[in-house]
Length: 542
Ligand code: VG1
Ligand code: CO
Image (cartoon, rainbow, N blue to C red):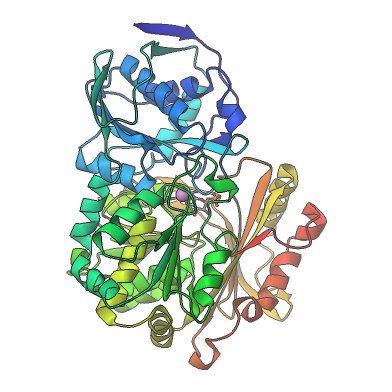
């Protein structure tokens, strides 16, 4: 039976950079999930009888939220729900399933790289029919609806058995529990030269893939070990756990440090990779060389033609504004455009749909392509394996040759996490107020060339998105960017992005923090980070 339940709005159900993210206890409040999901459906139209894809990264509260989504979808009139077995679907796999089955959209339960568990974070994200995150007009409508909601409609059917493949019904709606890996693995097989990668592993190439006890484990095991012949044990922490084993499922030099150390050891594996909570991020490290995400995007773009799915070349590149300019240099050489978008994958969707870009990336360990509408961790890893197999070179050699050909963009990001939100807002507002007076100023020997607040003009739908980050450019080509995170769940996180281009190959082997030391100092003092936030050093440096 379908019941109508009276409810009142909750404050703050505003989707951020990538969906609604809050602490688990917030989501556990009665009506909280129901209100948000009903607000999503109330903001959409003409989905009667259509298919909705549902799945998540397996974190704490995943199964409970999925049951609620299914009951509300049935009451709203969806014809079919495709849900991953065990409630599992990585974010890129959900995108692939939406696209392959022509679904109306999808609901992804994840807080991505944020920690999980009973007191950790949870999240809900709506993706549209192209497989990508809902664009701003849709998320704005969802938020507006959440502030006015007075009732939701829900089936009182019992829980669906999420662990058994096959079809059941909730009211008139079909619920199809599907293998979470199958469609995704098939898609990967069409993009990459699996035979060449199989030969690579067959010749003794060693790898360690750290799934960080998050969603990518089943995908990586099926593809790397079972399909491509990587040695058993190549995938570690391969079982998705509700609390990610108590770790922070963020693949970077801080949270995947163990992987880094192992690959750097002389007797370690030749290649290491890791993925985040929901499987859309990736970290790539070769013996003797960590690859920054910005470099990874550039190198993938320059070598994509080596993979069968991209043999005819790429139409264009897109990168988020804070991502380094390394990809721009590749685009220039290839004679294609490089688009600069605000942070968050939702801004790539239009460019990909319009065929303007093929490869996209963000400095935050995200790379992907037109095969789905999300960033895709395992895709990036397979692309690297394909490139390594085709070039018969190791990661360090490939990166070294890339820098020699294009120059090196030294790059680092300094995060100040959980700072006082008002202080962070004031810091940014103050920088914004100084934009006009900064040009010409000399700080620590560097001269400010220009400064602005990044605004994006979408070339496809003409929409304008303002206030996407304060940029300070220096006359020597260096750049500092300041922006506030839109994915945190406590206080504010100030992100400071630093970059300097170095054309001289004899200076390509410096330590990144050393190479950028003067810029780091300027970045700290220009807005007086310590005075305003009480922090003398960043929480996380990547
Ligand atoms: C961060 C990253 C951004 C990424 C987003 C979602 O956002 O900076 O590049 O798209 O996370 O990634 P923010 O607003 O906190 O800087 V994920 O893997 O958390 O979906
Ligand atoms: Co993620």
